[in-house]
Length: 322
Image 1 (cartoon, rainbow, N blue to C red):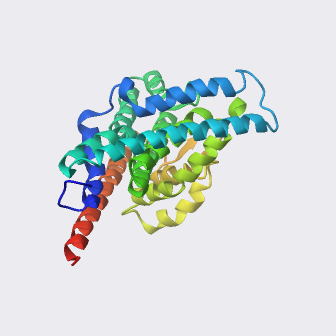
Image 2 (image 1 turned 45 degrees about the vertical axis):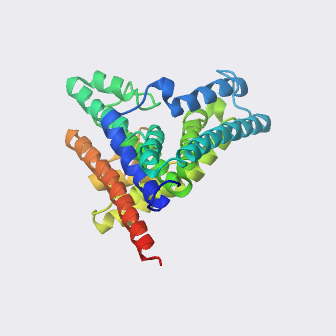
Image 3 (image 1 turned 30 degrees about the horizontal axis):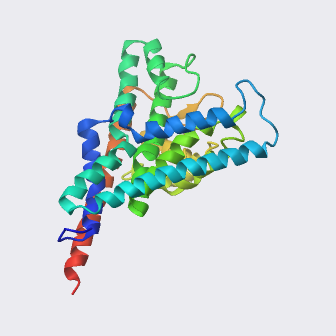
């Protein structure tokens, strides 16, 4: 990075903590300026052209739509990558003191910790008013039918959403930023958004298959890191039980952070008629919702500490060089 007297890696290592601080202070940018919203617009318009019509029965093997879905995914991924790479290259031409806040501002929309925490807390606040209010608030977070959920099941869904999206909205974007910079974080958020919009079964079975595979691949290691961070300080029994719990869901990744959260809290989590995590656990209550937010917050703090330690090591390594 030109114009600075400290290693470029120091500035890059400081970007995620500053981005998380911006997230805490300012929250989400307006939709008109939000890159994930732009990704959603592209996926929505493209998906309407290549997916089967609403109500159509999925074909047993629809290779044409699979190919179209894969090509559309790659086109969108390339646009996200190139836009982020150009922005990062431009910012890195500036002095480090200017590049650091600008890069943090560019990374922030690819993270969504404050919004996730507030939305999950709002579910418990709504439940305090009535079960119907809690269901209505939960419907903003999940795609499943919430009309028949009990209060405990509403909390289960909210805690699962917190755990899974802790990975999708915080840990995984930062993981890919650490490896590939801003383009890596942008690529991951595009893949995750594509999976959310296209990766469903039913009529999207073949159109969204590549999107689902890509998200699974990019989330594989971050999901396990998220689970490990959630279990920091937990008894050894929780660590031993986690692999078996993670296999209870169809997703190769979602069961890891959700299973870790269930074990950490000692509660049962599940999707009615689909799976149950930690079936021997108790029903979650209001206190468990607060604890889930506390444990997730500790993961975010751990990430900041890890990055700061990395920064110190970079500085020390630079100072020791002849």
